[in-house]
Length: 200
Length: 200
Image (cartoon, rainbow over all chains, first blue to last red; front, side):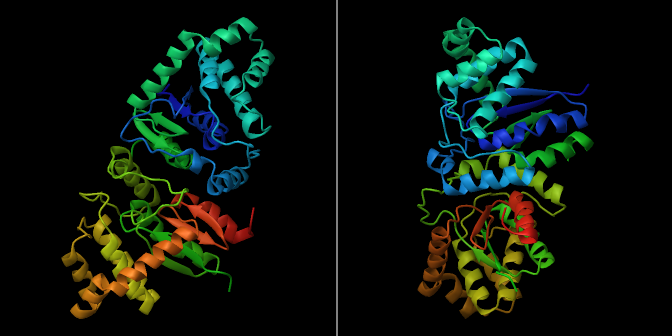
């Protein structure tokens, strides 16, 4: 089996949400696995390559409209959240706790969080919303608290973000396969060509 | 005939170059005209919506590779210029001088400048390179100097940039049709759907 695809996303990114609905299908068509990585783009990203997209832009009329149009174009359910640009550290810490134990469960957790935010307009920066999702997945209250706030969970997320930055990730969604970087779900056709016929 | 498509580009943008090879064909398929608008994104753009893409990013390895891959994907000739992120005020002033007299000539001038930069690796910030292109097009030396540096030409470009900003343009390429804004050539499939079947 060929190298897996690394899929980086921030739970705050509508574009990451749209990509999350497509990437596994693309990978499957080409016999590849996908490793999902939740990252937090606001957290200590200092790379010179970083394109800073300020909250004012994420909350701008253009992005609001663009995300709606993109989701309609791709045929994906999407309701613009009341608040774009939420803090996503806690959701990302929980994701890694679950994902390190089971990638299938990690993917399921990520999909539930993304749906809560981008379909059901729930505040995924709120502990009670995340706890509800965790409970649905059979995660105990004790584990939830460890996963969402223990220093080991904080360190785990920081390491993930540092690794992403070291690999040249600077946006969401971001894909890396065989060292080749693809930024944005509009690069998925190029990624697919890469998977089908190699470097170009 | 339906409303024309406004196509905004910065001569420094490889993405604008790639879009310039596609937009007229898309418009033609749907019976639309295209108005070309050269803008300068560094010039006094203060909109809150503006996404600042610093020169370090435009010159980054990611953008270099992405533009090459995109051009290969689209089947367009492209050679990464020795210097990305050149100043494009003079080229943009000349464009408007020519374009205001004849849109066909304006388009031809723009295509020659884009080809000089993105295929032949010529320095389009240099007066002599622009003058050579102007001479090929039958523009006299006197007209060239007026077009590239007279205060009327400066004011013309400033008005164009102000108008672009007022209309919500903040990147290159940028398209507006019937008030709907599309940023990036990767939004061309969405623009084409709009042209084919209206708002969605």
